[in-house]
Length: 441
Image 1 (tube, rainbow, N blue to C red):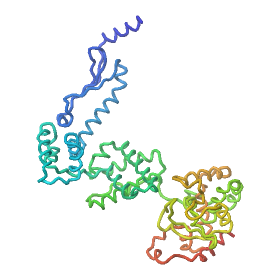
Image 2 (image 1 turned 120 degrees about the vertical axis):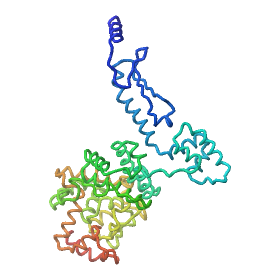
Image 3 (image 1 turned 120 degrees about the horizontal axis):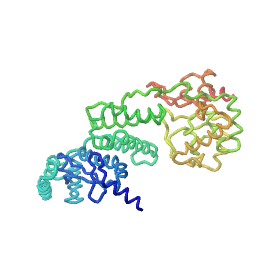
Image 4 (image 1 turned 180 degrees about the horizontal axis):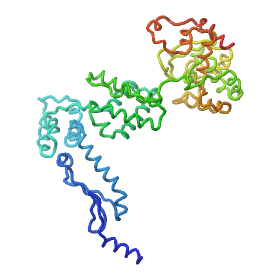
C-alpha cells in the first residue's frame, strides 16, 4: 500500500508529455478535448467536445486512438450528411411525423395552412442551421437526396428481389457487399458521398480488399453484382456518368480448362460403393453422372418434373429453385439407371412435392454438395476433381462420341450466343437420347 502511494505521488510530481487533444484534470484523470471546427458549429451545437480517457496515463494512451477515431467520424459524418437528410430530421423533431412525411413526399402546396409551420421553423433555425437546410425547410421543398453507393445497392435489391423469399441468396450477397464497402471506403463515402464522386481508385481499392480473402473468380462474381447494380441505376435514373466498376482487371479470374478436371470412368466406378449405402446420395450421383446437369438443377426437382413414361427430365423453374440462365430450361433424356433411382426416390411424391425433401430448403444444394463431396474425398484427393467434374465428364463424353456441338449445348443447357438458337422448340428428345445413349453405353 505504501509503495502504491509513493508511485502515485511520483506520477503526480513527474511532468508527462501529453499527446495532442489530451489534458489532465485536477483530480488526476485524463480527458480528450477537441474544438469543433467553425464550419460545423451550425450542426454541432457545441464549441468543444470532451471524452473521458481514464484514470491513469497508460489507460489514456490505450483509449486515445479509439476516442480520436470516434470524434473524427463524428465530424466527417456532419460534413458529409446531405442537407436533405438534416432537413427531414429537423422537421420531424420540431413539427412531428405527419409534417415530416408530407415534407419528404413533396406534396405540400403553397396555399396549405401548414406552410406557415415550415416558414416559422425556418426562422427559428436560421441562426443555428446551414442556409441550405433552412431554405428547404422554409420552402417545404426537399432537395432530392444524392444517388450514393448505398442507394444503388438498395434500389437494385428492390428491383431484383421484389419482396420474394426465393431471392434470399442475392439479398444476403448485397448486404455483405454493403458491409464490405463500408469497411473499405468508410460509411460516409458509401452512404453520403454522391455517386459522381466515386472513382476508379475506390473500385480498385475494393477489388484489392476482396482479393485478400477471396479467389479471383469469387471477386469477379462479387464485382459483377455491383456492376449490374450501377448499370441499372444509371439507366433507370438517366445519369450521365460512367460505371467505375465496369471492366475492372482481376488477375487470375476467368474460366480455365484446368479449373476442374472431368471425372474418369475408373474414378466413377471407384466412387459408386461410397454412395450406394445412401439412396438419396446414390440417386443424386447417378443422375448427375448420366445427365450432366448442374447439382442445383437436380436437387431442386419436383415430382412433376420427372416423366417416367417418356423417360425424361424437365429442368425448369419451379417452387424450389430458379435456373441459372434462360437456356438452362430444357428437357433431357434419362438413363435407365437414373430413371430407376429417381422412381425409388420419388416414392409417394406427386405434383410439386420435392424429390429430395431433405434438401428442399434455402441453401439446400450447398448441403447436398457437402454430403456428396464428403463421400467423393474418401476415394479422390485431387482438388480439381469435384462433383461438378461429372458435368465436365458428360461434356467430354459427348464430344468424344461425335455428338454435334449444338446438341451438346442443348443437353447441358449452355447458351449458344446466337439469335437463331432462340427460335423453335429445340432438339427432339429422341435426337438427344441417341447421342446420350452412346455415353451411357
